[in-house]
Image (cartoon, rainbow, N blue to C red; front, top):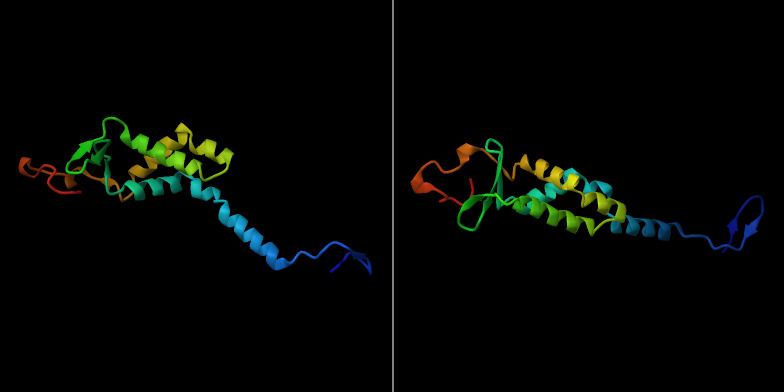
Length: 142
């Protein structure tokens, strides 16, 4: 087939089928994640969804609480930051080099931790916690 270039001019170049072009474009878009998927907010949402059952942040105390299987304990070793860093390394593996470098930065790690504090999956208030010695750590989650 030929492609008409102008008035009566013909080319020996094949016509690119529009359907194939559209299909290739869709496949390319599907394989490359959008930059929005790697924003601080999107990563914070991923973090809260993954760790919402085992972490609580009590803003009044300024502390993260971590479920240890049978008891809630204060995170005193920055385990939450380590969990965020694990998430950022995994996310960085799924994107282009320039974006990956930004995702692995300390600035992004800090932002994800800060944004996650307010997520309804992990936000808690002091009133939700045990009030008496006989009920300390009795319930699974506040």
